[in-house]
Length: 198
Image (cartoon, rainbow, N blue to C red):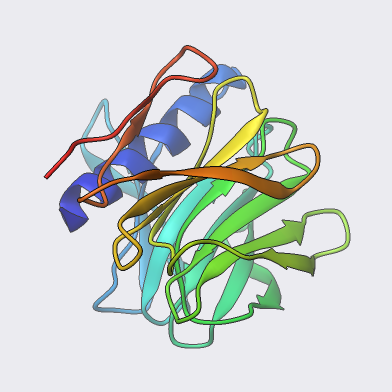
C-alpha cells in the first residue's frame, strides 16, 4: 500500500512538471534516510539529490517547477526546496506528524495530511511560507489529493475509515465517504473519486 502512495506522488509530481512544459523528473522520497532523489525516467538515472530532510515522506512540485515540497516526519515540518539549487529554503512547522501532501492547482496552497491524532489537513500558504490553518477531519490523514479542476481536496483516513472531501475555495469540510481502505484514486472528472471497499 505504501508503494502505491509513493508511486502516486511520483506520478502527480511528474505530471505537474510535464504540464508546465518542463522536463519530467520523478521525485522519489526515502523514509528510511535523509535524502530525496530526482530521477530522469528516460534514462533511469539520478539527476539530482535533495539532502538533509530526515524521514521524508510526501513530495509534490509547484505547478511552475520552481519549488519542491517535502513533508518531513522527523521535524513535523513542510520543507520548501528550491527547484534549481535543490536546497531547503524554508521549514514550515505543522500541527502534527505529516504524511502525504498535494499542491493546489494554482500553486498558492500546499495541503498536508496530518497522521498524528486527532489528524487534519494543514493548509500552507506558499507565498508567505506559513501554516494558515488546520482543517479538522474525520480521523488522521495519510493521503491528500487535489482534484484536477482544483475545486476539492480529498483526504483519506485509515483510522477513520473515511475519505474527507474539502472545498478548496472555502477550505471547509462538506462531507465524508465511508471507506474500509486508505487507497483511493482521483480521476479526470472533477468529482469522480474511486474508493475501494473492504
